[in-house]
Length: 113
Image 1 (cartoon, helix red, strand yellow):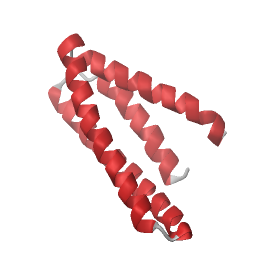
Image 2 (cartoon, one colour; image 1 turned 60 degrees about the horizontal axis):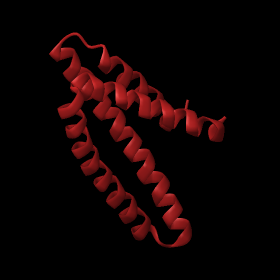
Image 3 (spheres, helix red, strand yellow; image 1 turned 90 degrees about the vertical axis):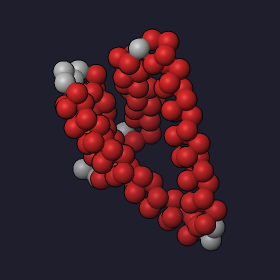
């Protein structure tokens, strides 16, 4: 299994496990593992973006655009997550996260199958 595929599968499994945690310590441990998986994903993405930019001789622009989009996405996710938690509670945040990841996987699966 390729590193990128492994990080996606592990991330989805961890998100599902996060919804069923029974203790705060278990939640922290799973969030720590999810952070490691996210770093694996980012390293894979940086490598891919670097290769694409190197081919087109615009490596700095491609990586800069990727970092900008990632940072804006991270900021927006915190804002939206705060609204979801305020309106529906913390468990709904995990359920919505699972549904979004499942939707993304189902959307991308035909491309990689």
